[in-house]
Length: 222
Length: 330
Figure 1 (cartoon, rainbow over the protein chains, first blue to last red):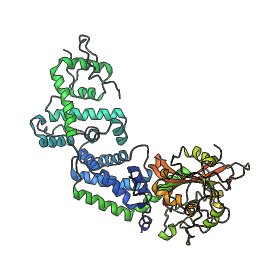
Figure 2: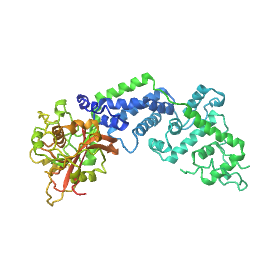
Figure 3: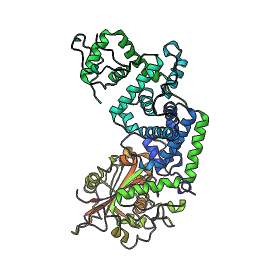
Figure 4: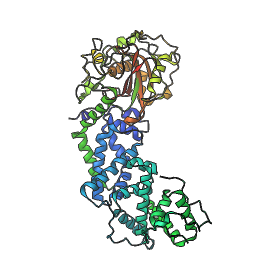
């Protein structure tokens, strides 16, 4: 019999008049409240599911990764580093579980599959077909890239948040996202990637002077 | 016309990764190259398409499977949660009593006690429900003589701020209510023995505190009188609105509060020198604004030190949120 079991979750009713936030729930879980972790998971499960599903591209793998992740979070809650949001922490565990799963099982290569046929160009498809094409294209990405782009573009995390979740610098997040988008665009819109790059391209052409547009001139550097 | 830009470069441009000169060149190029414009737009459409995938709903069978897995974890590995926390605290605070694990809500108690810190009797706090009940047979007697500066500041304590706030509590008699001024009311004494923490070290001047657990602070040798009996402060209207609801049980009952103080400090006659009702935030532990009582005690082994306990509302064997031995004067 676990001591956690033997002890009633005292205090639950004590604060029923207060809205418990994620940190409260996690604290209650650490304190032995059996219900708290389930509540926390229930609160975020769809979002966590979406991340796992779209990062891995396969519901069975997503369920496996999510189960690993949630058990890990359940047991490791007391070591949660509170310098990030609970959601960030949960996502980090889920994404790591996805990466682990891929690396452990070789669910798919960590490099793109150039031989895989391109998805049909999305601009001739309806919404549903587009969604299928996008998810199919996501599956062709290296897991690190799909994780980054799922977090930022799909789930709407900021680059900073994604950096915390993935445990890599923000520049790496941006770079993975950029590569992922380029690969996805290439597949989705049937574009010529023009991957062959002229080495002389690195210097701006002196002939081009006019029409400086700042709208596309990014200020931040990785 | 300059060279076309690759999709990778256009994506890097979009992500703000291109060096300034290259980015300017790309901007100039895009202004006059329809082909690259279209490809840059495709990057944007790709981001839109990803966003438009929208939310996903976890299938019911997956949800059920996860619920089962978590339920199994509760029954088979739930104990692991406790040693994890204990190990964490042991590292940080030099050990804590075995029953002292984080609880949902917290009370900070500052006071005079010889605490049995560092006596972790193995990993498993195995309190039964009965044993978990605060055990303070002498709390009633303590209450009679206690004059404890009692505050209800509602403020949030953190590991970093607690030293200043706790020492401030001691000196802040003006803003303090006193326990003695509260309506005498006893909830009755409780029998049984506290689990794990035991009472072996309680009676005889807290030998455990001298032996272990307090290495985080170097005891000074100078003698400083312990202000155990703080003068009664002017009574202050109880700022009930600032007290989290879950703390009401402790805030409204002197005996409950003293029982909690005794239980949490593992000292039957615990005489807090200051008590505050507020909240507790510890980023490292993932705790944020948890309702808490802060108890301040004199450290019985070192007159220069005070012992500060942050305790959750339940004040049971899972309620200790933090324990620190602090210099009396910062």
